[in-house]
Amino acid sequence: MEKLNKLLGITARKSQVYYGNELSHLNISTGQYMFIVTVCENAGLSQEELGELIGINKSTVAKVVAQLIKDGYIVREVDEFDKRGYKLYPTEKAKDIYPKIIEVLEQWKEYLIMGLTADEVTTLITLMTKVESNARKYSKVNRRKKNESE
Image 1 (cartoon, rainbow, N blue to C red):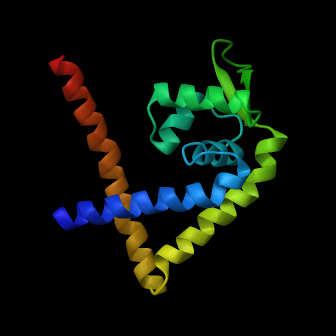
Image 2 (cartoon, rainbow, N blue to C red; image 1 turned 90 degrees about the horizontal axis):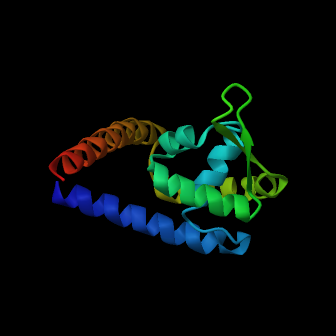
């Protein structure tokens, strides 16, 4: 299991380095691209929904969204059905860079699966989906345990 932790950690770090290098000319950080992609693909979602989709806590979502609004990538509009809530929409600026971000993500994916058969890719996706589900589940459990002990 130690090797798995190492492999996951290295892959995550190398991914962030690649994204940072390839997205730097767009003037967005590695922490912002997933927000822009998710809002472009799910226009009209709430901040809470955004956080759930990308697995980020509410306070981090609020900070990143505020910066993206300030930078002109996202607009926040009052929810017409719940005046206390807000919906997030991509601006033209976000829509303009969205294809470029997707191109970088697709290229990195191609590098990662290079040498794998189609069946191996399918198996990898199945296994990583289970791993990601466990990560979401148990990160919440550990947060609750920490909060209960305080």
